Length: 259
Ligand code: KIV
Image (cartoon, rainbow, N blue to C red; front, side, top):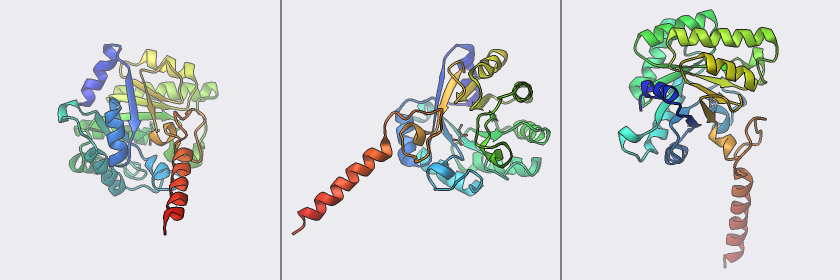
């Protein structure tokens, strides 16, 4: 699928469901679940590589993991979900040339058809505009933007009128710059609704309520694989607990079965 097809989902009132993936197992699971979109998010730094934030992940890491994800796909090319990669910290913040080069490397070396960029400060707007003009579709990301956690915190955004107005303004700017879709993370439900009603491009929420055009979740959160669960994601299974118990059981059994 191409990003332009995702835009049609909103026109046709079709909802978008997205999952993250970081290796061939999660890529295969996400693809087999019939998700419309698979994001190789920089959250993999935390849920797969054990870092405390998304900041340490590099461009080479994202490319490496994106290729593992697509090796897990089984469907025919034309039936595969849209694959999008996050632009890691410092691959776009330092300017337009570097951003085009980084986004280009992702597109050149993976099956991703678009990149996701966090934020909409004036410098980031220039970067997004240039990447799009160079032919690479961009998904925006507003609200809780984990790459800015040192200044904004890992907490819900849009709690006061001023920051709500800023998020609304930035969402409109991202649409005007040509983003084909926007992720809204951890903001009040009614703020997300207002933005979704105002925008023509799909608004995909995570911790932003049920009025968005779609939902995205970090698969590890959904599967209960993490020790720290975000407040907005109730796991569908207690994956880590279950797997730990089963492995423990197997280890104990095998030990006692040995002659
Ligand atoms: O990195 C990621 O997984 C993301 C999602 C939270 C949207 O950006």
